[in-house]
Each structure stands twice: as C-alpha cells, then as structure tokens.
Length: 113
Image (tube, rainbow, N blue to C red; front, side, top):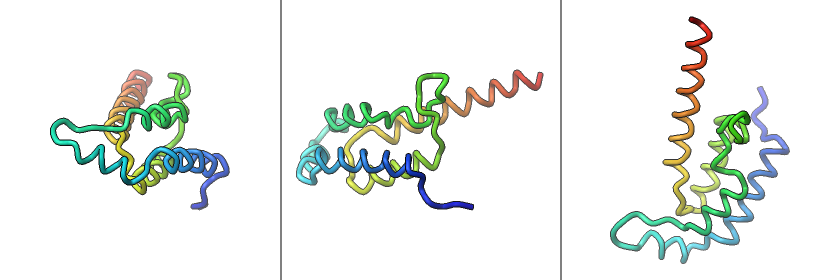
C-alpha cells in the first residue's frame, strides 16, 4: 500500500498553501474570529479557494466537480486547519459528502431492483 501523496496531490496542496500564506495571516484570522455575534468568515479567502476548486473536490466529475477521494478532502482539511482558515469549509464539505453518498446509494438501489 502506498501512503505517499501523488504529484497531483502535492501540486494541489502547494497551490492551497501559497494562497493561504498570501491571504490568511494570523492578525486577519483573529480579527475575523474575534467579532461578536454571528459567525464570520473571510469571503475573499473563500473566493480564492473556490477558484482553486476546493469546494468541488468530492463532487463527481459528472456534476462538474473534481471527483477526487476522501484522502484529498483530508489533506486539504489539514492544510486549512494549520492556518485556522476562517472559511465555511467543514459545513460545505459535509453537505457535499452527504449528498454525494446518498446519491450513490440511491443509484445503486435502483440498479439492484
């Protein structure tokens, strides 16, 4: 079993890391997290991550996503966590995973019938 990241995964992580290094400095993160009231996130950072395709990692290619695996979600989540990135990554990703897996189960059930 190979536990090393592929060249594509390393390139994706590098691009993500570059963006986070440029747009996610600790002072900015504190300013966003320290706001009282409703939860805040960095809309500019999120837009940059969307441009990289992060929200589409687990979306099947048939639906316009990247069609990657859970391991890809995990390595990106680790990188975002390292920077304490104030973005709606977790909620978005959990919704995508739930929808994708439910759709796959529904399609498999129809095939078995």
